Image (cartoon, rainbow, N blue to C red; front, side, top):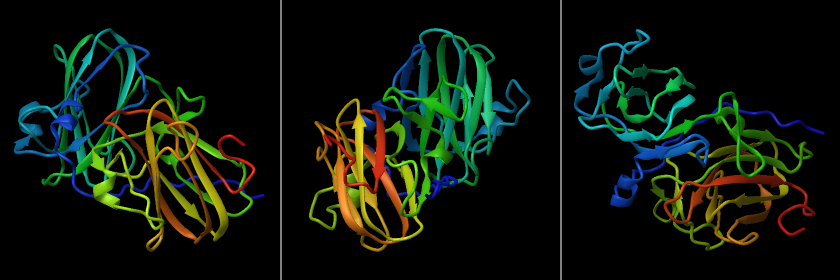
Length: 303
């Protein structure tokens, strides 16, 4: 049987950020140890008219702050208690930078410390207080991004659903018929700043795509060969939605087609190629979920 191989993250900017007041309010976050969901996700746009190097200089590790940032922070992270460890990372389809300005002389900056042109900051001993987070644009302009915060170290972040909230490289897969393990399962966090209905409309079966989705796909599934049958389903701690955007005009959407408020998509004749998978939130929440993919009709919810 074929083993699953994991692909590097492919980050695709998909549309223009919705600028509603509700999304603006969700840009800030208040955390205590043991917060859920972990990772916590926020979405916005990078850039501004200020030069980070001129305002902040170098951080407390001697790393130079860079990029064009806004006059006000993109996010304010309030820590109610001390954290022994936190990591903050960014995903965008463009070259962005990251500045975290905290209590006292706390200052951390990064450019390209994550995957590709994205940022990642890891640090121990975070004191309680407010941390102002700026996401800059290295070459100017404004760019959609998703920001993540976690108190769990390592490449795999254990999720509340019993699976994993994986880092980006583990959230993508390439499979051929007979893949193993089957079902393939992974967990992450739903939601984002894009309205799926505006971005995708209705799918090829006439189902309306719904929910708030991230600016980049949560998962990329590459089918090395055509599949005669595949099914995808979710298990989440709230009301989620599911969008599968494939080659050509292939588009499947579902809301509540599985068990309870979860999703279930079954379909025959999947052509080979790349599929972008978005797990949305029906409301504006960010929810832990587990996604399962199987080519076995005997699997799936309630079977």
